View 1 (cartoon, rainbow, N blue to C red):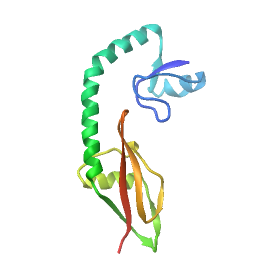
View 2: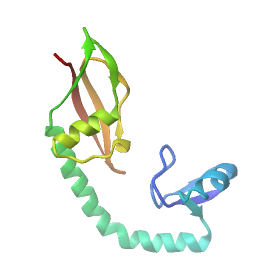
View 3: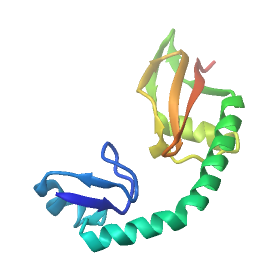
View 4: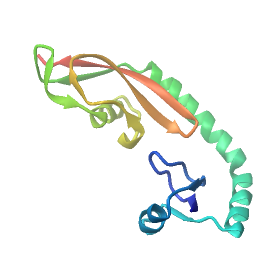
Length: 146
């Protein structure tokens, strides 16, 4: 079943992509949730015309995302957490990284930050997806609170 995505769907594709999925997944989840619609020949023509018009706007978005990515690389993120020795009493997730970025003046949604669950102090990296073509590797440090 071919569908045109209306929104970004994790592990499937980005907005305006034409994807092939199993019929049940498309009929029972993607279409009712408003994530996609059927890829009929007329819908494909409309999509092609819309993509032509969005091409120059897209170039500006990519350049803005790259500029933001360079600014994020310059930011030093230190996350303080309670710990016993090197082991944390909780964990550090992408939500903590998003809060630290917000304190630094960059409002990034936590959905676009990919990092594992950190349970020890030390230096780590996270991937921040700013645009479908721009992914920035962000380094951060987890420090034990005194």
